[in-house]
Every structure is written in C-alpha cells, then in structure tokens.
Image 1: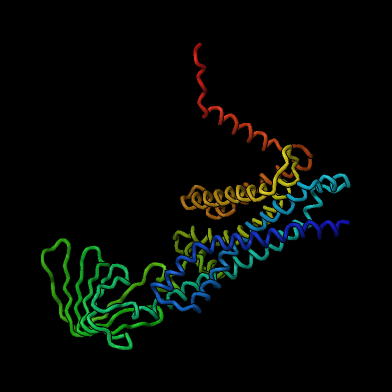
Image 2 (image 1 turned 120 degrees about the vertical axis):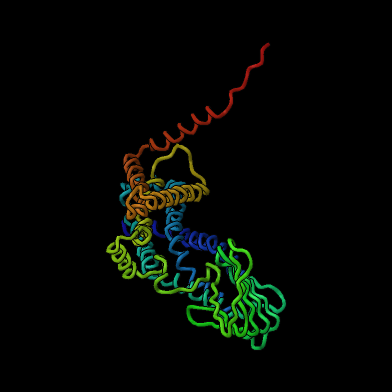
Length: 396
C-alpha cells in the first residue's frame, strides 16, 4: 500500500512541477531575450552564436527555477488531493503526514541533487563560457561596427571618426579619436592610418604618422606630441569586458578555485566576503527543495475551514517564494554589511522557512487549524479596521 501511495503522490507532483519549471524558466528567460536581440542588432551576432548563448544561460536559470517549480508541484499537486477530500480518506485509513514525507522527500531529493550539480559544477563553467562567447562576438565584430564619416561610440568614453575604411575592414584612413576615459584630461588623437588589432584578451588600434593633442582640465591650452606609431588600447562595454584569470568573479570560479581564493585572501588579510557567500550559496540553494518539501506537506495537510480553489496552490507558491527570496536578499545585505557572518547570509532563508515549516508540520500532525494562520488573519483584520476611517453618523 505504501508503495502504491508513494507512486500516486509522486505522480501528482511531477506534472505541475514540469509545467512550473517550463513557465518559470520562460519568465526568467524573457528578460535575457532583449539583451540577446540587442547583440544581433548592434553586434551582428549570428544565429548559431545566439543559440549557443541560450544554451549557456539555461543552467543559471534552471538553478533558480528548479526549487521554485518543486514548491509549485507540491502545493498544486498535493493540494488537489485535499480539494477532492482524498487526504481525508487516507487519514481515515491510518495514513498520516509522515507517510507523505517518503514520496515527496524522494522527489525533493532528486530536485536537490540536480540543483546541487547545476550550482557546483555546471553554472560556474556556463557563466564563464557566456562571458567568453560575448567577448568573442564583440571582438570579431568590432571592425564591422565602425562606419565611415561619422563619430562611432562603439567603445565607452571613446569617439572614433574614420574617413575611409579599407577592405576587408581592419584598416582605416584618416582617423580622429576623442579619448575621454581619463577624467582629468582629454586626448584628441589624429592618425593618417590605423590598423585594428584583435588578440585573445585585448583589442586596440595601432595608429601611424599622427599627433596627440592633450588638454588638462586645470591647465589652459593643449600639449601636442607627434608619433610614428601609437598603440591605443580599447575597452568594450562592461558586459563584454575581457576575461583574465585574475579578474574572474566568484560566480565564474570552479569550486577548488573558489576555495583557493578564500584561503589566499585570508592569508593576505583581505576581504573575502563575496567569495565566502558564493561558496555557501552553492550548497544553501540546493537545500531549498528539502525545506520546501516539509513546507508544502505542512500547508497542504493543515486543516482549513475554507475550501481552497485551484488557484490557491499557485498563489500560495508565489507568496512563499516571495518571502524566501526576500529573506535571501536580507541575508545577503546583512552579510555584506557585516551584521552577520558571510557564511550565514545564504542560509538565512533556509533556516527561517525551515523553522516555520516544522511549526506548521507539527500543527498538521495535531489535526487542528494553524494558530499561525489565525493570528495572521486577526492581525490583518485589526490593521484594516485601524486604517479604514470611521463613518460619521449624520445628526437628525
């Protein structure tokens, strides 16, 4: 009987879980589509490159949407059992909340292990590959983005005017460059010929036979310098910043490299808050499905005086997800400001939601309406009475 029950309950969770996974991933992906379309229009990326970027972005999205979809699967799938009074019939047969922990826990464990693999191994490598691919696109298309007889603002704080582009497009004649990257000075560079240099990790222009006019903000006039060869290093926009081993962010590091970075900074006495938080996040976030498993069972099996509709599971899922990510943002902010240890920040939502889940589960075991819900309802009603202005009774 228990095996049949486990298969039946798991079968109620998996379909809404898959639907939720698709829906949540599509919603998160919609925000990235705009930036990818911009790459096609402004950077001239090919369809193959865009497809590759989509594939590399998916692991980051799935790491977030897997726990979300799992909670939806529990609240919607097991909520149907409550709406159809099947849980009441099971209780009459001696099946209690602990019996639901086995099938739900197995599905939660599978979601947790999959999230752990994405968080620890797949997502850091995918993030690094995305940035490398974006830089490759920008690097290969930089020459094609420069137009003749107009000021081109392809590179931040640098304007480039080209009188003539010599095929195949990497050589330019009559070049004028306004370099405003130095906040204390402005350089105007004029060159007869310029050659686009594109190497792994860098991009720039090599100008021949020209002059550099430098104007300091606190000094009147210009200083002029002539040159035969002048190398100008160019920087792409922040999204496409070249990646070097020393400039990798913690999100792009592998697990051994992240631990080495923490030990290295600790030995130097430097701040390693971001690295510690990223390390703990890779293990805290995959733990969320296990917390959601207990939370979902407790919510579904807690007796409720009012029958819940089909939309109740979706609304409850969104409310708890909002609370979870609000706690995650709070924990991150408190860890960054030093109010709590950096390793505790990513675990804060699991700890608080876990305690609430245990409380609700104990209430479900006692088969009585949750005091938590009653107190929350009483608080909202009292606030509503205070905020609603009293109506004046007209005098007769």
